[in-house]
Amino acid sequence: MKLNALYQSKKVDISIELFPPKTEKGIEDLFKEVAELSRFHPAFFSMTYGAGGSTRNLTLELADRLKNKEKQEVMCHLTIVGQSKTEVREALQFLKEHGIYNLIALRGDAPSGASDFMPHPDGFAHASDLVSEAKRMDYFSIAVAGFPELHPDSSTRKKDIEYLKRKVDAGADAIITQLFFDNDYFYEYWEAVRKAGIKVPVIPGILPILSVSQVKRFTALCKSKIPPEVDHELRRCENDQEAAAAYGIQLATEQCKDLIKSGVPGLHFYCLNRSHSIKSVLQNIGY
Image 1 (cartoon, rainbow, N blue to C red):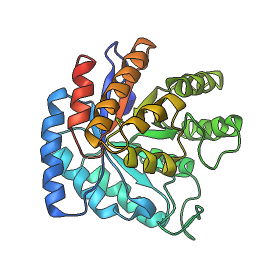
Image 2 (cartoon, rainbow, N blue to C red; image 1 turned 30 degrees about the horizontal axis):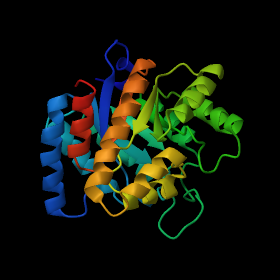
Image 3 (cartoon, rainbow, N blue to C red; image 1 turned 60 degrees about the vertical axis):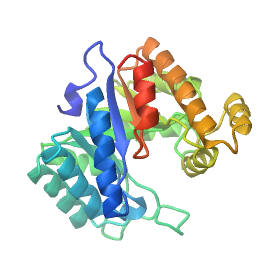
Image 4 (cartoon, rainbow, N blue to C red; image 1 turned 180 degrees about the vertical axis):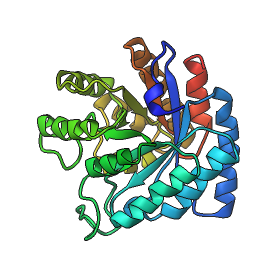
């Protein structure tokens, strides 16, 4: 089902994000996890791009396998960083030829070693340009990224929402947010989005914590905050990964229950290619 047809019913649609493994064994293990998670009937799995477009070909191949061999609905990530317009158009054509119509259009992270985003000399400059290009093909249903705690390059909420509106006006059908650990960040963002006249669904992104080192690494990368009460609990299980994962399940469950009660149309889970915590959270919230 296309993104523009999802999020319409009273049922909260769930989606699960995966990333391309580096080894053949990792790929086979990934599809074992997909088989486990498919029992919960997610609306789609998404497949990420590596920083700087570093996993482009593998991302496209795995999206194809998910869709056409595993018979799972899929949303493919596509970024503009490090790619010419021709390369981006080739990726879009590949997705179209393989029946993959859901896309999340992203600017993308700078390549390893680079601190700032620089457009390809013959590339697109903004994610909104990618939305426009994909929309021009009259095939894709497109999501874009939202940032409850501001995009790292945005100086104010006002500027952040203005740019979000540019992406939606270019043709985006949904907004999927960066992870957060305090639902108030999401609610403040959701209200600002609606006040700006943006009416497409806003889907919160949820990351069940797996370990203290993992969550610190992730929040440093995406500039998300660890709230004081979460930090307090993490300090208690700093050297106990099993306890950290159990707390991660508890926290994500509480977040999801509260978000569902508040009327969100969907939940997007950052899976990290491991099914255990996601399965536990989904069971806890009645899926």
